[in-house]
Structure formats: C-alpha cells, structure tokens
Length: 254
Image 1 (cartoon, helix red, strand yellow):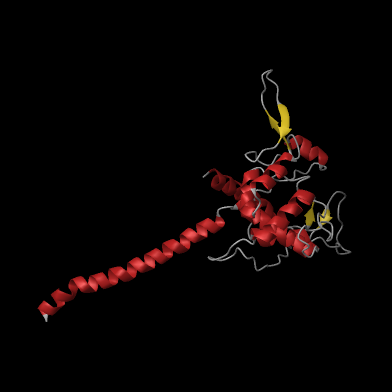
Image 2 (tube, helix red, strand yellow):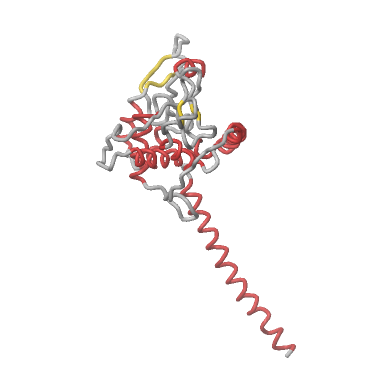
C-alpha cells in the first residue's frame, strides 16, 4: 500500500511538468516484461544494476530497494553481503547518543548519495536528482520514456539556444534538461561480456528500474493467469453442472 501511494503521488506531481513541455520524441521498445505473460530477463537486470551502480548511483538514490531484494536478480547471499558492505550506511544512535556509519548489510536499503536535498541541489547546479525507485511508474510510458531519454541526447538545432547548464534532449518535454548525458557507450564494461553500446546500456538500466518499480510484477502476473484459468475452469464446470441438474426437469416437461 505504501509503494502504491508513493507511485500515485509521483505520477500526480510529475504530470503537470510533463504536460507543460512539448516536442517529446519517444522510442518504443519491445520489453520482455510487457503483456500479461511478460517476465524480466535476469541477465538484463544484472547488467542494468551494474549500469546503475557505475553511472546512476553517484547522483540518484534507490530509496525503496533493500540489498536483500537483489536475490530476485539471481545474486546469492554471499554476493549480496559483499555488495551491501561496499556502502556506508548511517545508523544509531549509539550508547553515547551519536549517529555513526557502518558497512551495509542485506537488510539495509540503498543509501542516498547525498545527506539531504539541499546538498543534492548544491552539487547539481540547483537541480534535484530524483529517486529512481519508482520512476518507471511515475512517468507515462515509463520504460519507453526512460530509454528514450537516455539515448535522446543530440545536438540542438541551429535555431535553438541552449542555456548554460542545460542540455538538449529529443525525448524530454520542452527538450531542455538539466541532467548531463549519462551514457556514451563503452563507458560500462559488462561483467558478462555483453555488447556495451549506449542502446544496450539504456535498455538494461531501464529494465532494472522497471523491476525496482514493481519487484512483484512476475508474481502478480502468475497470480492473474492462475486466477483467470481457475475462473475459466469453474465456468465450464458450472455450465455442465447446470445442464446435468436441469436435465431431469427438461425430460419431465417433455
């Protein structure tokens, strides 16, 4: 319920900003998780997580995902503990009443790269890098939007003046965005040797963020399909039961 409320709030607050801009050019991708039988590709999620860690995590938080959730991506307990230990997590207070930092543990959530919003804005020229946990749910056509945004950095037309601190993006409403181009291709070398192009990086990190927005997606779809199958079976059984029950009545009337 908390995740649902947060998603709704993100959509409501982001909708006016998206509606205000124009000229957004979205590319449509055939995502593996689309449709009633869609599923996540575990290898793609792991590559997307690598892109997030090496590129996105320096500015964007992942507030609603715990390290232990990475088990869904295929990481074992030892790997998750090693990943968590790479992060410093604030804890406390201790016996002296002071906060302290310690290595992360699987139960911790991904810590923010900044101590507060003011620090985040100060480090990014006044712009606030949003949390990415629910971003796919917070934008219309969320997966296509994020992919298009990541590959949409192009040179501005000669007739367009790009202000200092802004960048031209073909997929962003109004085309002016404060976030510098994050992906250039070949800047993340995949651990599995997969092609490291800007398009592949964008696809994989978008798939990963689709998972962070709805980790229970596959379970929900399985339950939906099972419920639909159950209803179909019960409908057929009810139909034949009705015919059997009323068969004697029809014979008597005949």
